[in-house]
Image (cartoon, rainbow, N blue to C red):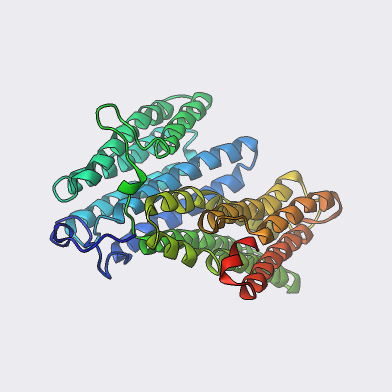
Length: 403
């Protein structure tokens, strides 16, 4: 639901004009801000590939959740703040620099870089929320109060982030897990603060077009990392023979198929639904804030799988390689199920079947080489995409949710 045109917003020094064609437009400053997250995703996937273990997966998951939370909170803020206005643009530049420091700290976040990661994360979360509350205080006091509540919650989690940054590795895991728990549960609680009340779904009037496009751009950043991994790994090989080209084509096909599954059916539907919903904030929170987490995580894990499969295609398939090759698409499809169920009301059968087949591939792991398992997983993704495409192409709009 788009708010009607309001002179308060049209003449605000900070806010987007509401009810106009420019309301949902993604500004160039936002695209510039996203450049930092290209490095962030690279750092996450490289760190996971270098420390691939149960502990490494847990640490990478925590860092991914933190990075996503920084980015999606900024996206919510710029849904109302106008990046084409100087104060907001300066905010994005400041966040961009802090994001650069955050990215630099990722490889050593559970070592010597823990305090740097915590400091930059806290500065981004608390600083942005406080700025937004200040920017809205005159023209939109109701939403200013919402961001004041958010600032209180981020300040509470900051205590645990900073304590974790100063603590040893084991204590850091626990403290940062508490910090993430505080931040992730706060929206479900309406950011309730004693004396300040709580937010309601009706308070969050968002532009569905803007939210959908911003999240789509982040997905493209993540998919771009798989392309970079593929290109970098193959470019480092001494011999580019026919077998390597086939593997390269398979890796590219896998990435292109993930793009198709996300963008062909789902992204546009979500934007349309939010724009015509009486409670756009509820849908945006479920479909974009939360459901995109496994989508992003699955793409990052798939990038790691591509690196493993391309670098060591032959020999026995170990548990590390198999879990990445199978796990990446499984997590990605799980996120798409969540995302599409949030906007359609039902789980897509094609995705459920794809997950079932991928899990069944575990039975052949002892008998195949990494490249064979990698090709099989890519074939399953392609099958899911074709199933969904053919089903939705021939299905009435009212029955789309069932395929």
